[in-house]
Amino acid sequence: MKIGDQVTLSFSASDAGILPDRMIAALAEAGNIRAHYPFAPGQIQPASLDLRLGAIAYRVRASFLPGPGTTVAERLIDLKLHEFSLSGGAVLETGCVYIVPLIERLALPADIAAATNPKSSTGRLDVFTRVIADETRGFDRVEAGYSGPLYAEISPKTFPILVREGTRLSQLRLRRGHGVLNGDALRALHASERLVDRAEAVMGDGIAVSIDLSGSSVAADGNGAGVVGYRAKRHTAVIEVDQRGAYEVADFWEPIAARTDKSLILDPDEFYILASTEAVQVPPDYAAEMVPFDPLVGEFRVHYAGFFDPGFGYAGAGGLGSRAVLEVRSREVPFILEHGQIVGRLAYEKMLARPDQLYGSGIGSNYQAQGLKLSKHFRA
Image (tube, rainbow, N blue to C red; front, side, top):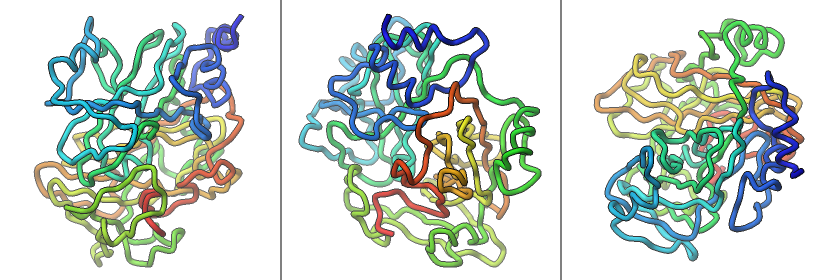
């Protein structure tokens, strides 16, 4: 019996939650996750798998979903404008939509489903990225038992980016059943673990996340008192996504100073990096996800990259609480944010088992113990 079969068949009927790193590796060894090349170092995270771009990219006329009975490859025949190689690197321009077949493909067991999200560094560059599977009706969700290829839809919104074969823009989580904590379970976990640094935080089945416009969240990073965020500049140079610490902040970002009234007017179609008031913790036996934007709270979108791995901000993993960095884009009208305004919520989900490695300094995580922090591409 293959290792992946042993993992799948060892679950009891009631077991539900996110698969940890060693189970992801076991599924790969069993052939449930397949790739043209061996996994790269660090590609398996505590509760997710980084997905790599393949060798060919297609510029397409518009975003699309294949729908039942149709593959992405079949839709590309009608929608592609041109194709080009990523082997030596290529620039993806702002305002364009690209489809890239991923190196990884899936042959999921019947009781394992998947979800995808942009990586944190991808969201902080305002690169709108979603994963598509064949015959699907929705982005970023892969049904249990799916067998087939995966594709990335990529649309840079602010900065042109340079990517190449093997670049990682998205990450995939595998889950069995429904392990999301309800309100009662979340309150009990918050009482024992203090998920954020305020007592009254549970909002329905999520932890409320509010915006910091006082400037206090920058202290941990030493970015200077009084800076509450950054606004992206237009018409900048290209950012090579695989580079770290390669770019000057001032060439791409304008710092936003705290106002005496602790408010910020979001300009339409501008991109901002802000931080949460709360310091967040994710205990080792749980993972978290930022709940998608609720249109009832205002005309803006918060947080493209929504996964929080086990150990994020956790004291035992070098955290002592980490701010949630928020990628914020206003919509058609200006919108005023006030300090402490709730802009989202974190849903917590059980892990099927504790990961072998937690998010944090031990595995070189970029955003542990962060305050207000830009992506890893910029010099401190």
